[in-house]
Picture 1 (cartoon, rainbow, N blue to C red):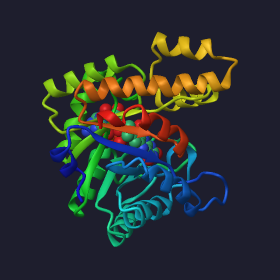
Picture 2: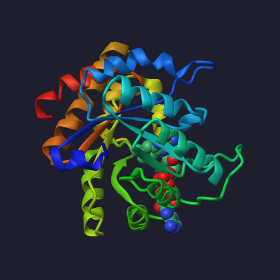
Picture 3: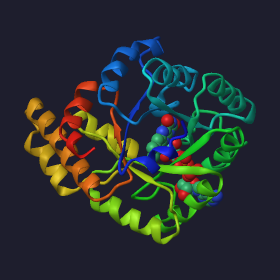
Picture 4: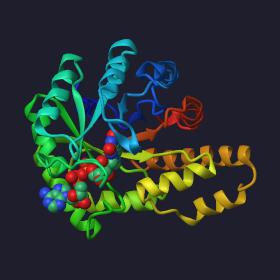
Length: 286
Ligand code: FAD
């Protein structure tokens, strides 16, 4: 099923994101028990990252997406980046996704890593999106409520979203954020700029101190004072920080659903226990 159909059926789509196991030699199959647990939350779809956070960009994404779709019976969204892949490699990956009957691809540029050889066949995600769309896939795109780090300002970044949508993206998923005000301002700006596709709000539950530093470094999300107060209040109490982090994510998500978000995308970080606890706090609204 093409994911855009979900938005025609449901007031708020609920999705999860996982990543291929990172540890040296860990197989895609080692994620399957966790996926079985995540499937119990009845997500509308599960997305699988590609080469994110130092992870290898290989066929693990396709294998895991195929397991989600065919063994768990849940729609899958395969992420794909082009910053380090040429046309030939992209075509090969798309062929493999097609053979596995994956119908939805999140077309991304990927972060520029100076230690890896840059390929320029597709300079921006929109160029990859056009190629993915032309190959018969439903295309999804990324967006940034606080602006992408390379953009001069948020307005310019929002204007650039038109390229993705013109290339075929049928919905967008946001970078994670901790302040819903940031999301609502972005949404307002995007709608005024004529971006009409559904926009899913990305939320990551933060349940440990080490996660804060890692996440902020990777996402550049700003931290509202309610969030930083929570972190310092429970600085020395792991369990209390865990509970407070879950509670923060639940309050954020409840507000987004009640505020009319087209969808919520939970960055589940391969942690079914965390996702389960968050889900319990929002399931009555879904
Ligand atoms: P683009 O849309 O190409 O944007 C990059 C920059 O170029 C932006 O500043 C944009 O404003 C600008 N731009 C775009 N088009 C034009 C144009 N025509 N002219 C001038 N400027 C332009 N990374 C991974 O490696 N693997 C993943 O699985 C992954 N999953 C992600 C999932 C989500 C939901 C999000 C939000 C991000 C994800 N990322 C992932 C990170 C992403 O790859 C990086 O943020 C990357 O730096 C930008 O990717 P993009 O697709 O948004 O790029």
